[in-house]
Length: 409
Image (tube, rainbow, N blue to C red; front, side, top):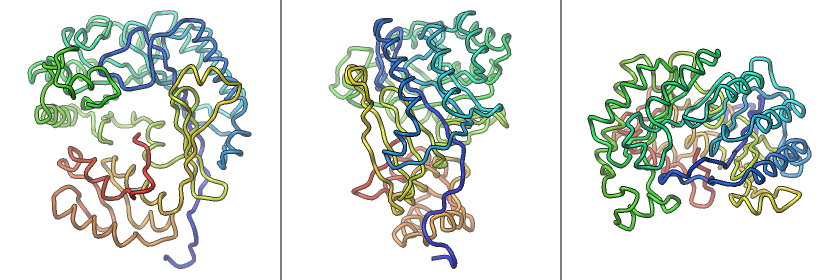
């Protein structure tokens, strides 16, 4: 143990606020989130439930064993599609956050929107609420691919929305793209990348299609069926090639990769998402919302809400599933989350922060992964190689204990 250091050091950090809004105009075939199409009545009940939880934040945090800092420097409305909420509902949510915390004047305030939901009225509401960043769930600039997964927009709509946001003064815009969608080809993927770069947006997120039982498309792929255009999904090798191409194209365009799935022009990295990967505190509200706060007794506490809307709306008090993060688990998280960033992790900083030497099994794993070409080590800093980013789950598994798993961010 480094001399004079005992226990996990907790420095003051402003809190991030995340609100998970589960409403969409349609459910995409690839979506594995707790979201769907619901009535306006349920939307209002949801907003009121979330506002009640926000008002009770400090008491709830204390009961869950965490410390809530009132200073808030990031707010993120995700989903789902928050822009499907009525203007007054968006205002109600953000006004409640401001009423019950100290939102900093320069706070990053992000709202996720689906192309086609960014009307002039919604844009004005975003401006009125202090929103200064918008994340557009584009997924593809190819209309055939968008239709294949149930998206309601086309390329023309997306470009018009970006222009409308920019004209209104919201220039910090992210575009989401997915590699591996049904009917995607090398040519169409390159066209989507070219279009994303041509828009001039300062941030692009690139995800590889997830195949699991939590989405209709995923279940059909696993079953070997043809519904939802499952038989037109590129294979794993081609999807990995698409991702590699995205890394090259974004870098050449000056949109540098800073995290496995995220690329930004200088100064436009997502401040809120960086909280997840650097273990800064954040409090989640809404459906299937996750939180991580510094602990009163342990290094940290993680907790999450139900993913069942009926359960969420059917109680006057939101129940949480709680995971106390021990010092050992905290070190695992430093590796699991920090290695997602291109800059990687600094082993000496982790030792200073935790008051413990890096466990022997971790140093052995690092040596083995370096030998396999998945990690690069320069003095005390360790980072994923390009191949390591493609096989990141295999790398992370080497640093996660069998009993205490951390959530994927």
